[in-house]
Image (tube, rainbow, N blue to C red; front, side, top):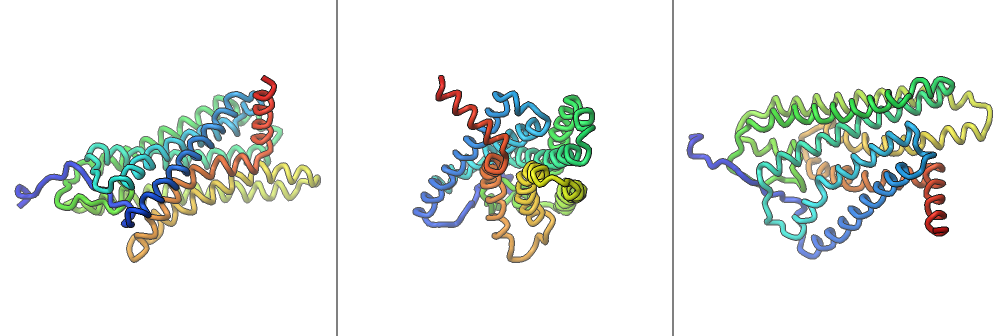
Length: 310
């Protein structure tokens, strides 16, 4: 029976079942969002590289977050835009597996980077006198390297379990990119182990790290409330508020998608939620950091003044 089945060598991303006019409208809107994502995160990277006052651990971590956001968007959005123009354009098996692997790599890495950034804020506010000794450059580089290595390793585990599965019959992936759960639905074999690993991976990189972030900010809040100076409290809150907004957006959508119930009528809603997660989150992150962070705004003002003077 297995010999009569046709092995799938390419997939068709169903994307959004909309009319041609709406697809053209979405193409223009998503292209605009994608451009803002690249420009915003690129501006954050440029400011951190060019302004010596931003050469601190906090902005070192932020620069890697910006790189992840650029890579995150570049992995999914261009293909989605092509599909809006030509819904019948297939994606090769290798291209689909690569997209799945890269998405998981960047998602895991961003989870871990947000934990590292919360630890940095915890040390800065709860142990300010020991900050420079604890958060030395060797420690910072090590923490970022561990985040990237673990991100690649965890994604590789999912890919190793995914590649041996036989894919036959239907080629239609009910998503706008090769999301792992949508791809698993097309496998002609038992995918229980894969689904358990996806859930276990989500719990390990979402629930665990999110819990540690909550604990860190509980300590930070207690430390801030002990500050007598109103100006000191405001400064401490301003350094944490941007990170808290990013954490809320990223972890909130990710936990709903991968830790919440996987069955029921919410599958289509989760597809749109993942669109927000992979397209709007990377666009909003630099906006949040630039609007709510005085040092970033001052760095931008200094760069603009230099440009005018030159």
